[in-house]
Length: 598
Image (cartoon, rainbow, N blue to C red; front, side, top):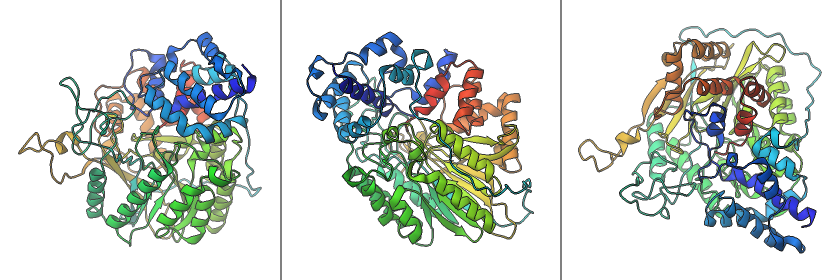
């Protein structure tokens, strides 16, 4: 077998594995060292790379198909990858064949530009004990030589001070093929669909408003959400951090993605009205194939222009012209929310390991972080505060990107007063500390729960209360609320238990300051809350329950608790790795975290 053929197949299989995974809520495990692996990468299709030994992994990537002895072409390599996917049980035959065909052209073009040996592939899949993986070289952005201003700890606003009420939506994942009564526990990565089959007496079926399983949402649930939040207004503005399509990533097309982008964008505009401004961010599921976001140096049909142009068209009623210009360029933008408060919307796909285009060049893709520094310095000069939104939390990003972002947050801690993300589908947060001592809390990345039920969750949304529009406002998050649609109640009317409630109400699950006994959600308060989690297990178990939007079956004890605290403390990927090794996870925690695909 020729070397370039082997490399192509190796790289394809390495990157296909996370594509077929899913973001599943943490469940306690009897195997402590594997718990965090379960948290981030337990596949929805029944395959687990942990079942493969190191020698077998290397053998698989050395001997794939004798047919490839002849000159490779895209079709032949794709066929070989599909066969390997099937034989390794990464997914069933139909999913394997469809996803390799979907990814074939762009995938192979990008992979041919990069280098990855079998030992590197197995190190990525199985950990450092099976080889070394250092494909993404370190890099640094340049900060201005202007000294950092003295830091003044924030003070709580005076009683009666104005507050901004901000609606936050993320991870809608609308499934056009959702069908009531279909199988809810099928063998595919996504169930409750018209091709999932009819349930037998031993299998669960899809509910009317949604289902506790690996299922996404019907459009009526999304519309019901928007009707409810419209009545729950007024809103000062809205943050919406992406992931519109369902998790059927093996069978999506550009046409379908654009159609769903259009439908959901217009529904939001219709229900919230012309007087509410929505500020979106790009999710990892918006593209086809999923996670495919080439940097701007890629031109023509392979570029993301088809997607960014459509976003600019749909979001034009909400965004200024200059924001639309950078949105079309790289999927990110900045806009003034109010005098003294600016928003930056980042394209976090440029920090995601699953974005195979970054194998070509992962050094500050699209110069986005350098652009962010320019925006932050200008805001510091003008005395503006800045909120940052994005899809993937920075603590789950590629190491160098995450390290640089953390460095930027440290430098501009007095300017950045809010960070808001989604992606994990869970209700959590990640802390930022001063780089010198790693003990002084200076920032919080809030990670909001998903609208979708995927996996085993209630649908939900978030409301943030932010220090308001007045002179001297900190613009920090003071509080937040989480609302849910209780599917147990919504799918079973009290009058007729076998029938759904016709117009279900989304109800308050909790308010953060009341649930945890806090005065605000300033970084210092969130840090104290983490200390309380350690000392008071009753409070931590409440967090665990709320983290899953009120639908979790077992408590989180011992190692489970340690791993969750690691995640909450790790606003930087390097910190996640360090916590991983200090607690004896042998690389599994960090490796699993970076392969999250929601």
